[in-house]
Image (cartoon, rainbow, N blue to C red; front, side, top):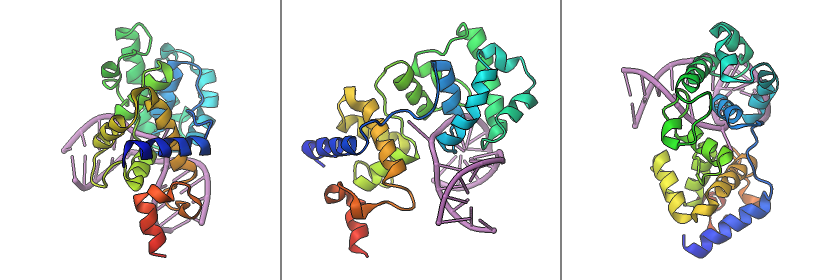
Length: 214
DNA sequence: AACTCGGGGCA
DNA sequence: TGCCCAGAGTT
């Protein structure tokens, strides 16, 4: 895919989802980090339902470690993998208090060392909370990138991220991330990609293949 | 690279 | 019921 095609692809998705943004409710970097950590393997709607009450009860890192682990587990019980996540949140809060003055660090290298925070979560935090350009590759971004032909099927998540960063101007990384996610979540879905009505069918590797075998 | 954690949503 | 979901840690 050449430069003009990439431009057309990004603009087209931008027109489809002009308000693409982070859908996890939060009001500061700390809350965003907690929300993204909780969002692993479950939908953001579920996370928002839980954090609506959670963020009313827990305001600071101190609040999270002031309660027994079992109590925090109960408070996020409706989210999958809640035992791992509750444990990680308490460890993370302890580290924030004792190493970072109770604040979420701005550096990507420090973020990925926090328990429960991987490359994807760190990218979301720096891009949405600290305005650092980043492309967080989740299941949507990975699937969409591979279908469109921006990456190969055998590519690892890191390889997908590197290819996207190479193809997209740095100042558009974060916006591209949001656009690809909306495109994957609401149009190019895992089970039911809507190729019949897709404006990107002309340049989509997987779409053309799917339409042919029908 | 494969496996595990895991309740909720949706067909 | 069965399958998937804005992943990360361990083996």
